[in-house]
Length: 512
Image 1 (spheres, rainbow, N blue to C red):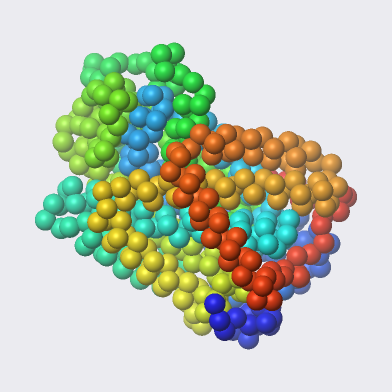
Image 2: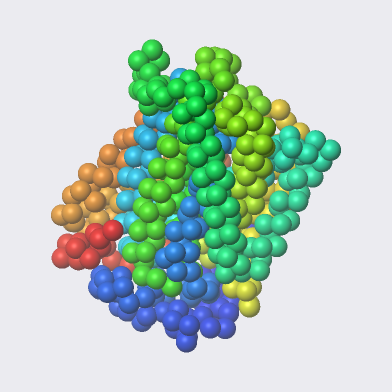
Protein backbone atom coordinates (compact mmCIF):
# COMPACT_ATOMS: atom_id res chain seq x y z
CA UNK A 1 0.00 0.00 0.00
CA UNK A 2 1.98 2.96 -1.29
CA UNK A 3 1.38 6.43 -2.56
CA UNK A 4 -1.07 7.33 0.23
CA UNK A 5 -1.10 11.05 1.03
CA UNK A 6 -0.08 12.25 4.47
CA UNK A 7 -3.14 14.48 4.74
CA UNK A 8 -6.37 12.81 3.56
CA UNK A 9 -8.35 16.01 3.94
CA UNK A 10 -5.89 17.94 1.77
CA UNK A 11 -5.79 15.08 -0.74
CA UNK A 12 -9.57 15.21 -0.97
CA UNK A 13 -9.41 18.93 -1.74
CA UNK A 14 -6.69 18.46 -4.35
CA UNK A 15 -8.67 15.76 -6.14
CA UNK A 16 -12.09 17.38 -5.71
CA UNK A 17 -14.18 17.48 -8.82
CA UNK A 18 -15.84 20.65 -10.07
CA UNK A 19 -18.94 21.45 -8.09
CA UNK A 20 -17.56 19.96 -4.86
CA UNK A 21 -17.29 21.54 -1.45
CA UNK A 22 -19.80 24.27 -0.78
CA UNK A 23 -20.53 25.02 -4.40
CA UNK A 24 -23.84 25.72 -6.11
CA UNK A 25 -25.02 22.12 -5.95
CA UNK A 26 -25.63 22.45 -2.23
CA UNK A 27 -22.79 20.12 -1.30
CA UNK A 28 -22.06 21.76 2.03
CA UNK A 29 -23.95 23.70 4.65
CA UNK A 30 -21.20 25.41 6.55
CA UNK A 31 -22.85 24.37 9.82
CA UNK A 32 -20.74 24.32 12.93
CA UNK A 33 -20.48 21.12 14.95
CA UNK A 34 -23.01 22.15 17.54
CA UNK A 35 -25.35 19.21 17.32
CA UNK A 36 -27.99 21.45 15.78
CA UNK A 37 -27.18 21.07 12.10
CA UNK A 38 -29.52 20.65 9.15
CA UNK A 39 -30.68 17.28 10.40
CA UNK A 40 -32.77 19.06 12.99
CA UNK A 41 -34.71 21.11 10.49
CA UNK A 42 -34.60 18.87 7.45
CA UNK A 43 -32.89 21.74 5.58
CA UNK A 44 -30.48 19.57 3.65
CA UNK A 45 -27.41 17.31 3.70
CA UNK A 46 -24.76 17.81 6.35
CA UNK A 47 -21.40 19.43 5.69
CA UNK A 48 -18.74 16.72 5.83
CA UNK A 49 -15.91 19.25 5.71
CA UNK A 50 -16.16 19.60 9.49
CA UNK A 51 -14.93 16.00 9.63
CA UNK A 52 -11.90 16.80 7.49
CA UNK A 53 -13.28 15.68 4.11
CA UNK A 54 -14.08 17.43 0.85
CA UNK A 55 -17.46 16.75 -0.78
CA UNK A 56 -16.52 14.84 -3.93
CA UNK A 57 -19.43 12.48 -4.63
CA UNK A 58 -22.53 13.90 -6.31
CA UNK A 59 -25.47 14.57 -3.98
CA UNK A 60 -28.41 13.54 -6.14
CA UNK A 61 -30.30 10.77 -4.29
CA UNK A 62 -33.73 11.47 -2.81
CA UNK A 63 -35.35 9.59 0.08
CA UNK A 64 -37.25 7.51 -2.47
CA UNK A 65 -33.99 6.66 -4.23
CA UNK A 66 -32.49 5.53 -0.92
CA UNK A 67 -35.53 3.41 -0.10
CA UNK A 68 -35.53 1.79 -3.54
CA UNK A 69 -31.78 1.25 -3.30
CA UNK A 70 -32.18 -0.66 -0.03
CA UNK A 71 -35.09 -2.74 -1.34
CA UNK A 72 -33.23 -3.68 -4.51
CA UNK A 73 -30.09 -4.50 -2.51
CA UNK A 74 -32.09 -6.85 -0.27
CA UNK A 75 -34.06 -8.18 -3.29
CA UNK A 76 -37.78 -8.58 -2.45
CA UNK A 77 -37.66 -12.08 -3.97
CA UNK A 78 -34.34 -13.03 -2.31
CA UNK A 79 -35.80 -16.03 -0.41
CA UNK A 80 -36.51 -17.76 -3.72
CA UNK A 81 -32.81 -18.42 -4.18
CA UNK A 82 -32.06 -19.81 -0.69
CA UNK A 83 -35.50 -21.08 0.33
CA UNK A 84 -34.42 -24.72 0.47
CA UNK A 85 -31.37 -23.99 2.65
CA UNK A 86 -33.43 -22.01 5.17
CA UNK A 87 -36.21 -24.63 5.13
CA UNK A 88 -33.70 -27.36 5.94
CA UNK A 89 -31.90 -25.37 8.64
CA UNK A 90 -35.16 -24.35 10.35
CA UNK A 91 -36.81 -27.75 10.30
CA UNK A 92 -39.52 -26.34 8.02
CA UNK A 93 -40.18 -23.19 10.10
CA UNK A 94 -38.81 -20.93 7.42
CA UNK A 95 -41.32 -18.09 7.98
CA UNK A 96 -40.37 -18.01 11.68
CA UNK A 97 -36.67 -17.80 10.77
CA UNK A 98 -37.35 -14.78 8.58
CA UNK A 99 -39.54 -13.15 11.24
CA UNK A 100 -36.82 -13.50 13.89
CA UNK A 101 -34.25 -12.28 11.37
CA UNK A 102 -36.31 -9.17 10.65
CA UNK A 103 -36.57 -8.36 14.37
CA UNK A 104 -32.81 -8.78 14.77
CA UNK A 105 -32.09 -6.60 11.77
CA UNK A 106 -34.58 -3.96 12.97
CA UNK A 107 -32.53 -3.36 16.11
CA UNK A 108 -29.47 -3.10 13.87
CA UNK A 109 -31.25 -0.60 11.62
CA UNK A 110 -32.07 1.54 14.67
CA UNK A 111 -28.38 1.59 15.61
CA UNK A 112 -27.47 2.52 12.05
CA UNK A 113 -29.96 5.38 12.24
CA UNK A 114 -28.27 6.76 15.35
CA UNK A 115 -24.74 6.57 13.96
CA UNK A 116 -25.64 7.85 10.49
CA UNK A 117 -26.86 11.08 12.10
CA UNK A 118 -23.79 11.37 14.28
CA UNK A 119 -21.42 10.80 11.34
CA UNK A 120 -23.21 11.46 8.00
CA UNK A 121 -20.55 10.06 5.67
CA UNK A 122 -19.74 7.04 3.55
CA UNK A 123 -18.04 4.03 5.11
CA UNK A 124 -20.84 2.48 7.18
CA UNK A 125 -19.55 0.56 10.24
CA UNK A 126 -15.97 1.47 9.36
CA UNK A 127 -16.73 5.18 9.83
CA UNK A 128 -19.09 4.71 12.77
CA UNK A 129 -16.80 2.46 14.82
CA UNK A 130 -13.69 4.45 13.92
CA UNK A 131 -15.22 7.71 15.11
CA UNK A 132 -17.61 6.38 17.73
CA UNK A 133 -15.06 4.14 19.50
CA UNK A 134 -11.50 4.38 18.15
CA UNK A 135 -9.74 4.44 14.79
CA UNK A 136 -8.13 0.95 15.12
CA UNK A 137 -11.55 -0.52 15.94
CA UNK A 138 -12.90 1.18 12.85
CA UNK A 139 -10.19 -0.39 10.71
CA UNK A 140 -10.95 -3.91 11.97
CA UNK A 141 -14.69 -3.32 11.59
CA UNK A 142 -14.17 -2.14 8.04
CA UNK A 143 -11.98 -5.16 7.39
CA UNK A 144 -14.69 -7.54 8.60
CA UNK A 145 -17.29 -5.63 6.58
CA UNK A 146 -15.11 -6.12 3.51
CA UNK A 147 -15.67 -9.84 3.97
CA UNK A 148 -19.33 -9.13 3.30
CA UNK A 149 -19.16 -6.36 0.73
CA UNK A 150 -16.26 -7.58 -1.41
CA UNK A 151 -17.49 -11.17 -1.57
CA UNK A 152 -21.23 -10.66 -1.95
CA UNK A 153 -21.07 -9.51 -5.60
CA UNK A 154 -19.17 -12.72 -6.45
CA UNK A 155 -21.80 -14.76 -4.63
CA UNK A 156 -24.61 -13.01 -6.50
CA UNK A 157 -22.95 -13.46 -9.88
CA UNK A 158 -22.27 -17.13 -9.21
CA UNK A 159 -25.81 -17.85 -7.97
CA UNK A 160 -27.29 -16.10 -10.99
CA UNK A 161 -24.94 -17.95 -13.33
CA UNK A 162 -26.07 -21.29 -11.91
CA UNK A 163 -29.74 -20.31 -12.25
CA UNK A 164 -29.31 -19.11 -15.84
CA UNK A 165 -27.34 -22.24 -16.73
CA UNK A 166 -30.28 -24.35 -15.52
CA UNK A 167 -32.50 -22.44 -17.95
CA UNK A 168 -29.98 -22.26 -20.82
CA UNK A 169 -27.61 -25.24 -20.38
CA UNK A 170 -25.74 -24.40 -23.59
CA UNK A 171 -24.22 -21.31 -21.93
CA UNK A 172 -21.76 -22.27 -19.15
CA UNK A 173 -21.89 -20.73 -15.68
CA UNK A 174 -18.61 -18.85 -16.15
CA UNK A 175 -19.97 -17.09 -19.24
CA UNK A 176 -22.97 -15.81 -17.31
CA UNK A 177 -20.64 -14.57 -14.54
CA UNK A 178 -18.61 -12.58 -17.07
CA UNK A 179 -21.78 -11.17 -18.65
CA UNK A 180 -23.25 -9.92 -15.37
CA UNK A 181 -19.92 -8.44 -14.15
CA UNK A 182 -19.45 -6.42 -17.34
CA UNK A 183 -23.08 -5.28 -17.42
CA UNK A 184 -23.07 -4.01 -13.83
CA UNK A 185 -19.66 -2.36 -14.11
CA UNK A 186 -20.75 -0.34 -17.14
CA UNK A 187 -23.95 0.74 -15.36
CA UNK A 188 -22.13 1.82 -12.19
CA UNK A 189 -19.43 3.61 -14.19
CA UNK A 190 -22.13 5.74 -15.82
CA UNK A 191 -22.90 7.31 -12.43
CA UNK A 192 -25.15 6.94 -9.40
CA UNK A 193 -28.10 8.49 -11.26
CA UNK A 194 -28.01 5.64 -13.79
CA UNK A 195 -27.90 3.13 -10.94
CA UNK A 196 -30.89 4.80 -9.27
CA UNK A 197 -32.97 4.69 -12.48
CA UNK A 198 -32.19 1.02 -13.07
CA UNK A 199 -33.03 0.26 -9.44
CA UNK A 200 -36.58 1.52 -9.90
CA UNK A 201 -37.12 -0.53 -13.05
CA UNK A 202 -35.81 -3.71 -11.42
CA UNK A 203 -37.90 -3.16 -8.28
CA UNK A 204 -41.08 -2.98 -10.37
CA UNK A 205 -40.09 -6.17 -12.21
CA UNK A 206 -39.48 -8.07 -8.97
CA UNK A 207 -42.74 -6.80 -7.45
CA UNK A 208 -44.73 -8.00 -10.47
CA UNK A 209 -43.17 -11.48 -10.37
CA UNK A 210 -43.77 -11.77 -6.63
CA UNK A 211 -47.39 -10.65 -7.00
CA UNK A 212 -47.97 -13.22 -9.75
CA UNK A 213 -46.52 -15.99 -7.59
CA UNK A 214 -48.54 -15.06 -4.50
CA UNK A 215 -51.84 -14.77 -6.36
CA UNK A 216 -51.38 -18.03 -8.27
CA UNK A 217 -50.11 -19.88 -5.17
CA UNK A 218 -52.98 -18.74 -2.95
CA UNK A 219 -55.50 -19.78 -5.62
CA UNK A 220 -53.75 -23.16 -5.89
CA UNK A 221 -53.96 -23.68 -2.12
CA UNK A 222 -57.66 -22.78 -2.18
CA UNK A 223 -58.13 -25.44 -4.88
CA UNK A 224 -56.60 -28.09 -2.62
CA UNK A 225 -53.09 -28.22 -4.02
CA UNK A 226 -50.12 -28.56 -1.68
CA UNK A 227 -50.70 -29.43 1.97
CA UNK A 228 -53.49 -27.00 2.77
CA UNK A 229 -53.33 -24.21 5.33
CA UNK A 230 -51.11 -24.83 8.35
CA UNK A 231 -49.09 -22.84 10.89
CA UNK A 232 -46.14 -25.22 10.54
CA UNK A 233 -44.01 -22.64 8.63
CA UNK A 234 -44.23 -20.51 11.79
CA UNK A 235 -44.20 -23.17 14.52
CA UNK A 236 -43.76 -26.93 14.43
CA UNK A 237 -43.82 -28.56 17.86
CA UNK A 238 -42.02 -31.65 16.52
CA UNK A 239 -38.87 -29.79 15.48
CA UNK A 240 -38.90 -26.47 17.35
CA UNK A 241 -35.89 -25.31 19.37
CA UNK A 242 -34.40 -21.85 19.67
CA UNK A 243 -30.93 -23.05 18.69
CA UNK A 244 -32.43 -24.55 15.51
CA UNK A 245 -34.29 -21.34 14.67
CA UNK A 246 -31.29 -19.08 15.29
CA UNK A 247 -29.09 -21.38 13.28
CA UNK A 248 -31.54 -20.92 10.40
CA UNK A 249 -31.54 -17.15 10.99
CA UNK A 250 -27.81 -17.12 10.30
CA UNK A 251 -28.64 -18.41 6.82
CA UNK A 252 -31.78 -16.30 6.32
CA UNK A 253 -29.84 -13.14 7.18
CA UNK A 254 -28.32 -13.35 3.71
CA UNK A 255 -31.67 -12.10 2.38
CA UNK A 256 -31.60 -9.05 4.68
CA UNK A 257 -28.07 -7.96 3.85
CA UNK A 258 -28.34 -4.76 1.88
CA UNK A 259 -30.42 -2.44 4.04
CA UNK A 260 -27.13 -1.38 5.65
CA UNK A 261 -25.79 -0.50 2.20
CA UNK A 262 -28.00 2.61 2.31
CA UNK A 263 -25.51 4.11 4.76
CA UNK A 264 -22.84 3.91 2.06
CA UNK A 265 -24.82 6.50 0.09
CA UNK A 266 -24.69 9.12 2.88
CA UNK A 267 -22.48 11.47 0.86
CA UNK A 268 -24.68 11.11 -2.23
CA UNK A 269 -27.99 11.86 -0.51
CA UNK A 270 -29.46 15.30 -0.99
CA UNK A 271 -31.67 14.79 2.06
CA UNK A 272 -30.78 15.34 5.72
CA UNK A 273 -28.91 12.55 7.47
CA UNK A 274 -32.15 11.47 9.16
CA UNK A 275 -33.30 10.17 5.76
CA UNK A 276 -30.63 7.46 5.89
CA UNK A 277 -32.09 5.94 9.05
CA UNK A 278 -35.68 6.27 7.87
CA UNK A 279 -34.84 4.60 4.56
CA UNK A 280 -33.15 1.70 6.38
CA UNK A 281 -36.08 1.08 8.69
CA UNK A 282 -38.62 1.44 5.89
CA UNK A 283 -36.77 -0.87 3.50
CA UNK A 284 -36.31 -3.47 6.22
CA UNK A 285 -39.99 -3.48 7.21
CA UNK A 286 -41.20 -3.76 3.61
CA UNK A 287 -38.73 -6.43 2.54
CA UNK A 288 -39.08 -8.43 5.76
CA UNK A 289 -42.85 -8.57 5.40
CA UNK A 290 -42.53 -9.79 1.81
CA UNK A 291 -39.98 -12.42 2.88
CA UNK A 292 -42.30 -13.82 5.56
CA UNK A 293 -45.38 -13.91 3.29
CA UNK A 294 -43.73 -15.57 0.30
CA UNK A 295 -41.88 -18.21 2.34
CA UNK A 296 -45.03 -19.00 4.34
CA UNK A 297 -47.01 -19.62 1.14
CA UNK A 298 -44.20 -21.55 -0.56
CA UNK A 299 -43.77 -23.80 2.50
CA UNK A 300 -47.36 -25.00 2.10
CA UNK A 301 -46.60 -26.08 -1.48
CA UNK A 302 -43.31 -27.94 -0.97
CA UNK A 303 -43.73 -31.39 -2.60
CA UNK A 304 -41.94 -33.39 0.13
CA UNK A 305 -41.21 -31.33 3.29
CA UNK A 306 -39.70 -34.25 5.21
CA UNK A 307 -37.25 -35.03 2.44
CA UNK A 308 -36.27 -31.37 2.10
CA UNK A 309 -35.51 -31.17 5.83
CA UNK A 310 -33.53 -34.42 5.91
CA UNK A 311 -31.67 -34.16 2.60
CA UNK A 312 -31.53 -30.44 1.95
CA UNK A 313 -31.68 -28.64 -1.38
CA UNK A 314 -28.33 -29.22 -3.17
CA UNK A 315 -29.71 -28.01 -6.49
CA UNK A 316 -31.22 -24.83 -5.05
CA UNK A 317 -34.58 -25.51 -6.71
CA UNK A 318 -36.90 -25.94 -3.69
CA UNK A 319 -38.82 -22.71 -4.26
CA UNK A 320 -39.20 -23.38 -7.96
CA UNK A 321 -40.46 -26.88 -7.18
CA UNK A 322 -43.11 -25.34 -4.93
CA UNK A 323 -44.06 -22.96 -7.74
CA UNK A 324 -44.38 -25.96 -10.09
CA UNK A 325 -46.87 -27.56 -7.68
CA UNK A 326 -48.95 -24.38 -7.79
CA UNK A 327 -49.12 -23.84 -11.55
CA UNK A 328 -46.73 -26.05 -13.46
CA UNK A 329 -43.49 -25.38 -15.30
CA UNK A 330 -44.22 -21.83 -16.46
CA UNK A 331 -44.35 -20.47 -12.89
CA UNK A 332 -41.26 -22.45 -11.91
CA UNK A 333 -39.35 -21.02 -14.88
CA UNK A 334 -40.62 -17.49 -14.20
CA UNK A 335 -39.47 -17.52 -10.57
CA UNK A 336 -36.10 -19.03 -11.53
CA UNK A 337 -35.55 -16.42 -14.25
CA UNK A 338 -36.60 -13.59 -11.93
CA UNK A 339 -34.20 -14.81 -9.25
CA UNK A 340 -31.33 -14.95 -11.73
CA UNK A 341 -31.96 -11.44 -13.01
CA UNK A 342 -32.61 -9.97 -9.55
CA UNK A 343 -29.45 -11.47 -8.03
CA UNK A 344 -27.19 -11.19 -11.06
CA UNK A 345 -28.15 -7.68 -12.16
CA UNK A 346 -30.27 -5.68 -9.71
CA UNK A 347 -28.69 -6.86 -6.46
CA UNK A 348 -25.18 -7.07 -7.87
CA UNK A 349 -25.49 -3.56 -9.29
CA UNK A 350 -26.15 -1.95 -5.91
CA UNK A 351 -23.73 -4.31 -4.12
CA UNK A 352 -20.91 -3.19 -6.40
CA UNK A 353 -21.83 0.46 -5.80
CA UNK A 354 -21.84 0.03 -2.00
CA UNK A 355 -18.57 -1.92 -1.97
CA UNK A 356 -16.80 0.75 -4.01
CA UNK A 357 -17.93 3.39 -1.48
CA UNK A 358 -16.52 1.38 1.42
CA UNK A 359 -13.16 1.05 -0.35
CA UNK A 360 -13.27 4.76 -1.16
CA UNK A 361 -13.93 5.70 2.48
CA UNK A 362 -11.08 3.52 3.79
CA UNK A 363 -8.68 4.73 1.10
CA UNK A 364 -9.17 8.42 1.79
CA UNK A 365 -8.41 7.70 5.47
CA UNK A 366 -5.08 6.11 4.41
CA UNK A 367 -6.19 2.63 5.41
CA UNK A 368 -6.10 1.35 1.82
CA UNK A 369 -4.06 2.45 -1.24
CA UNK A 370 -4.75 6.04 -2.30
CA UNK A 371 -5.71 5.18 -5.88
CA UNK A 372 -8.98 3.72 -4.54
CA UNK A 373 -10.01 7.22 -3.39
CA UNK A 374 -9.91 8.64 -6.93
CA UNK A 375 -13.20 10.18 -8.08
CA UNK A 376 -14.11 10.43 -11.76
CA UNK A 377 -14.01 14.16 -12.67
CA UNK A 378 -17.40 14.23 -14.43
CA UNK A 379 -19.35 11.13 -13.35
CA UNK A 380 -18.43 11.72 -9.69
CA UNK A 381 -18.09 8.03 -8.80
CA UNK A 382 -15.12 6.24 -7.15
CA UNK A 383 -13.96 4.89 -10.48
CA UNK A 384 -10.89 2.89 -9.41
CA UNK A 385 -12.73 1.29 -6.50
CA UNK A 386 -15.57 0.35 -8.85
CA UNK A 387 -13.19 -1.28 -11.33
CA UNK A 388 -11.34 -3.13 -8.54
CA UNK A 389 -14.61 -4.57 -7.19
CA UNK A 390 -15.46 -5.73 -10.71
CA UNK A 391 -12.07 -7.42 -11.13
CA UNK A 392 -12.24 -9.17 -7.74
CA UNK A 393 -15.83 -10.28 -8.39
CA UNK A 394 -14.86 -11.68 -11.78
CA UNK A 395 -11.84 -13.62 -10.51
CA UNK A 396 -13.64 -14.99 -7.45
CA UNK A 397 -16.75 -15.80 -9.44
CA UNK A 398 -14.79 -17.76 -12.04
CA UNK A 399 -12.81 -19.60 -9.36
CA UNK A 400 -15.87 -20.48 -7.28
CA UNK A 401 -17.74 -21.57 -10.43
CA UNK A 402 -15.18 -24.38 -10.72
CA UNK A 403 -15.88 -25.61 -7.17
CA UNK A 404 -18.81 -27.76 -6.09
CA UNK A 405 -19.07 -25.86 -2.80
CA UNK A 406 -18.56 -22.39 -4.25
CA UNK A 407 -21.95 -20.96 -3.33
CA UNK A 408 -21.91 -22.48 0.15
CA UNK A 409 -18.40 -21.24 0.89
CA UNK A 410 -19.12 -17.68 -0.23
CA UNK A 411 -22.45 -17.61 1.64
CA UNK A 412 -20.88 -18.54 4.97
CA UNK A 413 -18.14 -15.93 4.64
CA UNK A 414 -20.53 -13.16 3.61
CA UNK A 415 -22.90 -13.76 6.53
CA UNK A 416 -20.15 -13.96 9.15
CA UNK A 417 -18.52 -10.73 7.98
CA UNK A 418 -21.80 -8.81 8.03
CA UNK A 419 -22.98 -10.08 11.42
CA UNK A 420 -19.68 -9.34 13.17
CA UNK A 421 -19.72 -5.85 11.69
CA UNK A 422 -23.24 -5.34 13.04
CA UNK A 423 -22.08 -6.44 16.52
CA UNK A 424 -19.44 -3.71 16.54
CA UNK A 425 -22.03 -1.19 15.35
CA UNK A 426 -24.17 -1.78 18.46
CA UNK A 427 -21.12 -1.31 20.68
CA UNK A 428 -20.31 1.93 18.85
CA UNK A 429 -23.76 3.37 19.63
CA UNK A 430 -23.40 2.69 23.36
CA UNK A 431 -19.82 3.94 23.51
CA UNK A 432 -20.38 7.11 21.49
CA UNK A 433 -23.65 8.23 23.03
CA UNK A 434 -23.72 6.80 26.56
CA UNK A 435 -20.05 6.52 27.55
CA UNK A 436 -18.68 9.55 25.73
CA UNK A 437 -21.80 11.70 25.46
CA UNK A 438 -23.57 10.80 28.75
CA UNK A 439 -26.83 10.39 26.84
CA UNK A 440 -30.00 9.81 28.84
CA UNK A 441 -31.86 8.42 25.81
CA UNK A 442 -31.58 4.94 27.26
CA UNK A 443 -33.80 3.06 24.83
CA UNK A 444 -32.18 4.26 21.60
CA UNK A 445 -28.63 4.51 22.93
CA UNK A 446 -28.45 1.59 25.38
CA UNK A 447 -31.41 -0.82 25.55
CA UNK A 448 -31.99 -1.26 21.80
CA UNK A 449 -28.26 -1.73 20.96
CA UNK A 450 -27.83 -4.24 23.79
CA UNK A 451 -30.85 -6.27 22.64
CA UNK A 452 -29.64 -6.16 19.04
CA UNK A 453 -26.16 -7.25 20.12
CA UNK A 454 -27.52 -10.15 22.17
CA UNK A 455 -29.68 -11.46 19.33
CA UNK A 456 -26.89 -11.26 16.75
CA UNK A 457 -24.35 -12.80 19.14
CA UNK A 458 -26.63 -15.80 19.59
CA UNK A 459 -27.00 -16.07 15.82
CA UNK A 460 -23.22 -15.99 15.33
CA UNK A 461 -22.71 -18.63 18.04
CA UNK A 462 -25.20 -20.91 16.30
CA UNK A 463 -23.77 -20.27 12.82
CA UNK A 464 -22.02 -22.99 10.87
CA UNK A 465 -18.62 -23.96 12.25
CA UNK A 466 -17.03 -23.46 8.85
CA UNK A 467 -18.25 -19.87 8.78
CA UNK A 468 -16.85 -19.23 12.24
CA UNK A 469 -13.44 -20.66 11.38
CA UNK A 470 -13.05 -18.85 8.08
CA UNK A 471 -14.36 -15.61 9.61
CA UNK A 472 -11.84 -15.67 12.43
CA UNK A 473 -9.05 -16.39 9.96
CA UNK A 474 -10.07 -13.26 8.05
CA UNK A 475 -10.14 -11.30 11.32
CA UNK A 476 -6.64 -12.57 12.12
CA UNK A 477 -5.39 -11.30 8.77
CA UNK A 478 -6.90 -7.91 9.57
CA UNK A 479 -5.14 -7.81 12.94
CA UNK A 480 -1.82 -8.56 11.23
CA UNK A 481 -2.41 -5.75 8.74
CA UNK A 482 -3.28 -3.34 11.54
CA UNK A 483 -0.10 -4.24 13.41
CA UNK A 484 1.84 -3.72 10.18
CA UNK A 485 0.37 -0.23 9.83
CA UNK A 486 1.27 0.59 13.41
CA UNK A 487 4.84 -0.70 13.07
CA UNK A 488 5.25 1.25 9.83
CA UNK A 489 4.26 4.46 11.61
CA UNK A 490 0.90 4.55 9.87
CA UNK A 491 -1.23 4.73 13.00
CA UNK A 492 -4.94 5.12 12.17
CA UNK A 493 -5.81 8.77 12.76
CA UNK A 494 -9.30 10.20 12.41
CA UNK A 495 -8.47 13.57 13.89
CA UNK A 496 -11.67 15.13 12.59
CA UNK A 497 -13.92 12.84 14.57
CA UNK A 498 -15.65 15.75 16.24
CA UNK A 499 -16.69 16.00 19.89
CA UNK A 500 -19.06 13.52 21.49
CA UNK A 501 -22.72 14.55 21.63
CA UNK A 502 -23.73 16.76 24.53
CA UNK A 503 -26.45 15.47 26.78
CA UNK A 504 -28.58 18.47 25.93
CA UNK A 505 -28.43 17.50 22.25
CA UNK A 506 -29.80 13.98 22.71
CA UNK A 507 -33.28 14.98 21.58
CA UNK A 508 -31.99 16.07 18.22
CA UNK A 509 -29.81 13.00 17.73
CA UNK A 510 -32.47 10.54 18.79
CA UNK A 511 -35.18 11.01 16.20
CA UNK A 512 -35.77 8.20 13.70
